Length: 462
Image 1 (cartoon, rainbow, N blue to C red):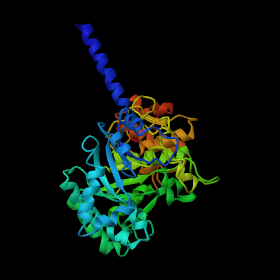
Image 2 (image 1 turned 135 degrees about the vertical axis):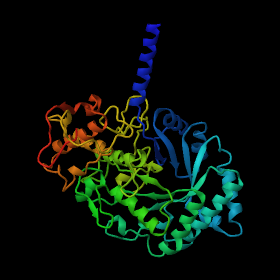
Image 3 (image 1 turned 180 degrees about the vertical axis):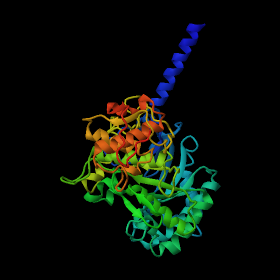
Image 4 (image 1 turned 90 degrees about the vertical axis):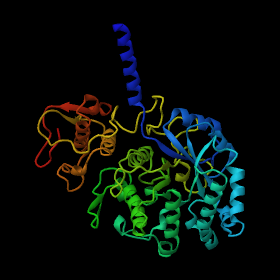
């Protein structure tokens, strides 16, 4: 009996260890197919469902081969209508019939075997110069919602992805954000009311990649930087993505719709671009996407929306070698056609990839405010640790603990170097995780010390 009990305990421990090593942050992904080297949709669906933590997929059309490929999987699907279909759906006399016909042909044969949860009315319609198309958007969304209900597909919500140009030009301070004139009065109040009434999210495509400059690269990539101070809210933004999301939220709240959920339809960072372009590569893509996953999927939220999770779709599943335009457009992919990762984001379940962190077993909700320094043990960065590893440690730890002290003006900002900043962040994370040895591992770059690393007004917690 003791031997049997021992075996049971060992088995339980192994299972717990395996579970702890499994990435725990679900995320969605855009599945574009403008390429000539991609695997079959059925193989893609099987891979995502069985090998990754990806739990949502967004399609740019309603290709039946792609929709049916996800039948019987736990993955939810977002399916898109082409922009050109919207005017016919908006017609007052025939629009509802047209919407029902489209749904009968494109969704009803596959639902509920395939878990379609979103129907997207076009893509970035407000970029268009076609006034008729813009005026068709909201009526088409209403007809689609009515048609889904009539066809019994009540689990499918209707929304449409917007580019960030829906905001009026501003100085980048979130509290100053409003929607563009005209849209602010005539379009978005009614559209946001539609979202409130139907429980669907307001979907935006925030792309710091398209807004960064060399001098704002760290701000765009969730790397340590002095940030942008918002005097109205007294918040300091050290992430462009956070600022963009809070700008959307502010514009919505000013119209009285701060309660409507926000979804991220697309956001990502390329691994290749034009020769000489600063800020594009594997490490930059990883830093951005890791930061965005922490904000959107961990419950970290943004400064104005703390503790919130956002339905989010990374861009993109694969590189698309047939896309026109700049080189970067063809290199946003997370996976190669053979399903190996382009870089490690911790999305694989089978142990060949680790979670988007340098720590082996992070706690899901570590306390952001451990007790003040008072002796004991501290975690610091090893002397000679690789700068890239230290930057990754900062990126990860600061997703869970308060790192204001190493921001510009903070008590621990100086000396302004990776060794010092990483040590502060790693120690805060280590203390928040109960000062367990594994929480100071950081892929071998951390070490526990009994010498208090505090100095001057910079106090390391313990």
